[in-house]
Image (cartoon, rainbow, N blue to C red; front, side):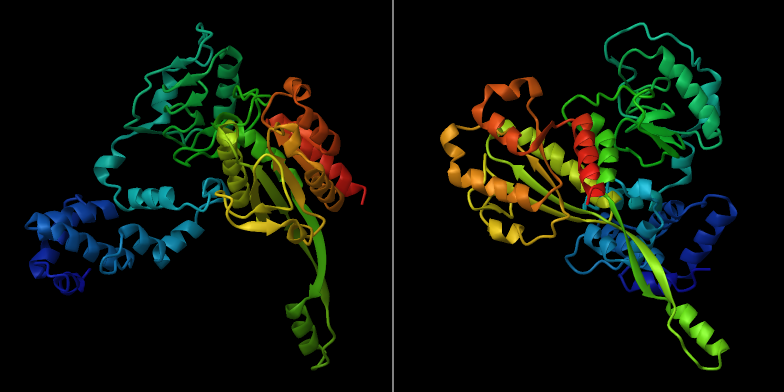
Length: 441
């Protein structure tokens, strides 16, 4: 076992020989090694003689055990990203675990390294969910109507609820939900965030039910977006707490299409049966096609917090649904085109946008409020051209609807476009309207 290890480690100028293997084997026999993380700890104790050898040791370990080759001057993150081991690990993640990918792998690299370095000591820090729920009363009253922070501190232990059936967890969650009157963070009982409760989000509960937010440790067995289980405000302005509800609504922009393609396997097999007389056989390929154009008003401080939320929402959408997402920017209104970059330096002429497929679903984010002279005749005509080209188009406004009538430009733009509040409910209404238009084609 690991016969080539001493030679490999000596290539990194580390003192490793047959005695290294003997000590490693004894550690196995004594039950000191149960995980790859244990091997790392034991080997480090055997091989590393001075602090300056820690770097070469880690490099040799990742190369030998994980085939992660760290180049000279290269960061560990980059080496992991280009390794086949990490790619295989990513491929084994389920869709729910991939939800928060957002084209940023840092969280995944940390999770990968956590699994690599998991030791027997770490495993002993995992509490059993049965022991937690045995002493928990699901009918406990929620006496405080305000947000409660139950033991809101860094969670240093995980609770494993995997051995408890989902039916049992759902039943208990319904009982807790009937008593819950406020938002909770931390703790093991309420539907909330950042704790060890089996129902909530952002905490450390393996095999629980995630509700109301983007996952924390990505360990949930089920995801529920029903506001009956978690106080999600679908009428509230888009933010992290209600983003999942908005994301579920965006699923509706996905469009199914059918394509007739050659069934090569059947054509060959049937041709061989017919003695080499090959007749083409066709089959129908059903695919999901989603095309989204997002136009964002990112000019000025008033729009800044909403821009971040919307970009996060559509980034999550991109990881959940395979689709074509184009994002462009403008300031207050458009003048002959938009910009490719958030700094608004790379101008894209409106003619280029109008060459896109007319079936794009277009979302415009902006408060629509500006000085009347900014929305001049030329700009009005540009908006009309977009409206004419794209039948499925909606304006998402972060300002409350009861304030839209206070601004002349908002009134005018709401007459051109279907305008919806930037809330999960508003986004859902926009998608429903888009789907009605699609069915009328």
